[in-house]
Length: 237
Image 1 (cartoon, helix red, strand yellow):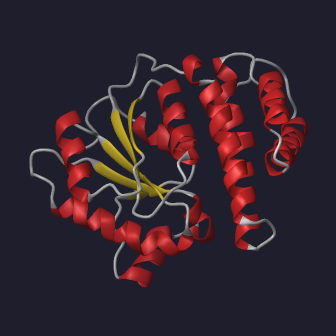
Image 2: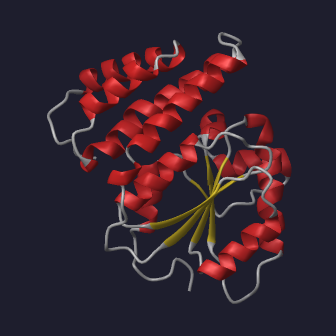
């Protein structure tokens, strides 16, 4: 991640604190002003998404879990982040280079889509084609249809709520069971729910649910981009 201007880590951290304060007030005007001051061109977007919005949303989620804020505050903070993201969608476009098609999908009962939209933008900025399936009621059959129609190379599942991990694992199992032999994408799982178990994830999930359903568990956009960039051939032959 390279910024168009020089900023120290402490300055970035200070911006994140200011942005978090703005979305918790809630103060859309200030949140947008902070964003406009930080993002001068498209190269700054990925830094703002990963260093400012993502940790702010994680902190909002933690505050809600600890009952430090009410549900309405959490909802308004999320809405402001969504508005900030929409502000920069015209700047975001796919770049030539990687012949990859990625599907980013909700898991059952997940209603938070900000993280998935940010991830989609980050992938697009790195030349990866993205489809978003943000319906929390999406079925395994729907995902299978998208995989077959679009020749998806990787399916990324985002889970925000820790208590929803079992639903995510079962959802992935159901999708895999319905795949045809002709096209088998790699299944990657991540999201805020995994912050509690970000080491030995597959082992932890196996102990919790009997097995780990996903092929990979990745926790940052950088990890995912690195994985997808390893080769320009199909992820799975």
